[in-house]
Image (cartoon, rainbow, N blue to C red; front, top):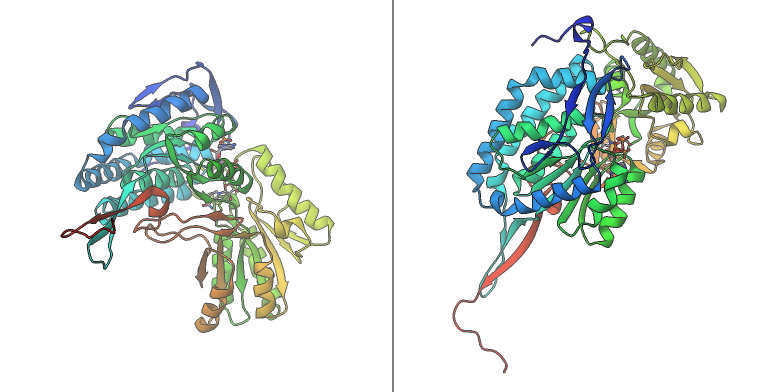
Length: 491
Ligand code: NDP
């Protein structure tokens, strides 16, 4: 695969992208468009049709009309579409990688990794339609339950992993027989719209997947209250997720929420320090820290504290920041100026409150350097608020018990890591950490298609994953009985 060099990649005419409703591209009802910028160059990357309530209604109606068509296709037919989508995505890898670089500021490695993982997810999902199970109940009659698709699923996704997260939601819904309206983030609408075309070319019937881009705020209330929508699957900020869940709950809809994190990496005094530093460096700075699973608190047991700081600063300072098209670049731009400023605010507030800035901390828009801040305390906002930037806040723990208490001192509970040579101790701690996902001797950034991805506390509600982990939101159980022989009724 060849990635265009920065000078070759400059676009003179921005792309034009329409909505994708009922199997066709169309402008928005209002004919309005919005601008989608390249975060590295600041240039206009695409002009995108701006959906509003009318378009959202059209997309929901198209999805609803397509439910019987999609549900009539047997499991083998759905499997074929998912396999074909995987093959097409692999063939179109270059185009997706280029778009991820230009639209979301992904480095070449992050963009390639995201496409490869998405192909893998699609392949793993192809078997899901045949795996949907029901139960039988011991009873005097024939009594069993089946799982049926809920109907229309609305998927709302963020900008940081725009292909991987949109694809996962769409596929989890399609594999279980549902139809979908996808609303990608306004900072990265093109990747989402490309998915509509990809599935269409893979043989998905018209209306089964609809993609509309535009301000989420203008469409959220409709999505969460429309009678045809049965499930909302949302990934994004906690405040947005809570808002949508409130409306959805009042309409008795299902919802799955993948929200923010403040993920701890606990380094115990018996850890392999070099290895732990490598894992933490990757998980704190990958994609400029703009990952819900990023290490966002490095909690270190006292005896290793100073040594860890020295090694972490050395590694962080050596990372290459700059144009994401250059293959050697390890950190690209922040998604936008607002994100950069919110990261910088958390760092400066912590330093003003007594934390030590050991490297980085000087914005160079659109870039923010890898930053290590030591002596971070629970009273600081850098300890409590999700950074979503390339910052490693380091916290001193007196002992393992203190490390656990510090890790759990958070309103979030998405992912956690524990570094120790004593696996038994690690396992005991893993059970006590308030997080949906815990990795012993590995980075917090880790996913597999068939595992329960998700968080506790303010990090979310529900789990995402193949092999049944999403059936709660994506299917409706139905109990069926057959009376065998005549029953005697009391009157
Ligand atoms: P936002 O919550 O701002 O936006 C996410 C999506 O929701 C976007 O498509 C957005 O549209 C849409 N949206 C915003 N307001 C509404 C509304 N009222 N009704 C309906 N949709 C709405 O999150 P970000 O895009 O800023 O993403 C970053 C956040 O996502 C971080 O907190 C991060 O931790 C979290 N995240 C969680 C993950 C997980 O799996 N737990 C994975 C990745 C990220 P628009 O762009 O048009 O505003």
